[in-house]
Amino acid sequence: MAERRIGVRIGPELWREVEEARRVLSKDAGFNLSINDFCLRALKELVTRVKNQRVESPGSSLFEGGEGKH
Image (cartoon, rainbow, N blue to C red; front, side, top):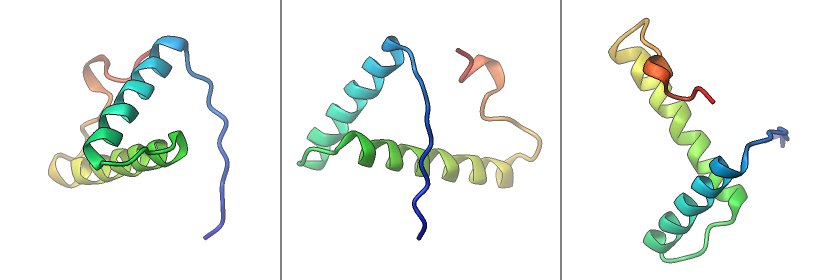
């Protein structure tokens, strides 16, 4: 599999939320997830949800109702 790099800048508030979520999931998993592993797992989960949402309700958007607007 080819490695792809993406550059994303996020604000400090969102970064704190990402770090907190990573800590919680690391604790639940019983080992420390690196920020890269956490972000990769989160991205995979997001892609899965979008795919499932398209099957369940075509035309709807994951970002309706203000979700994801920063």
